[in-house]
Image (cartoon, rainbow over all chains, first blue to last red; front, top):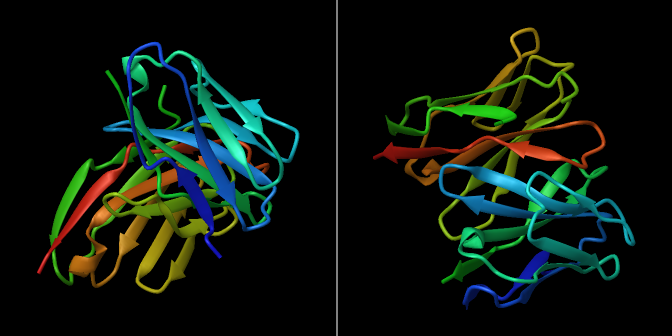
Length: 112
Length: 112
């Protein structure tokens, strides 16, 4: 039972490059979330998915796209990376009517 | 605009002390208030959560106090231990669990 897994753990991109962050869960939760964490800013919601086939914008969606591939997987795509997207990205799932969130270990992304 | 304001930014206490972390919000639609603990290099983990229909909730050494009229809530850690040294985040959400808003975090150091 791995819980929430994220790949990769670390990534360095050049400005303008694209990449997809992967998230998978084996907790059978309906809700999944993508956050970014920046020093002094806390965690900010990028996108969320309340169920398979649905996605909605959070606080800071600009520059990102998401795909809820199935109940287990929720990916985050940066089409054209910018230095402002340097951050630690966390995926989370929601159990207990989506209110208890379980976080993955994070992906540390640097854009140069 | 920060939906949930958290203070202090950092806190140092002696072992056995009772650190208190405070959070305030404006949106009266929030009705779920969790606290998360995060160790360096790890994802946040749910510590304890409260609904506004109670004024206090205890789980082990952790207590949430909630003041609905003041729109404030706080985390108290009884008999703090060096192993409690971590960053703590408060958060708030509406009952749907679709959008979570986090505070900016408090870095707690417990000195042996």
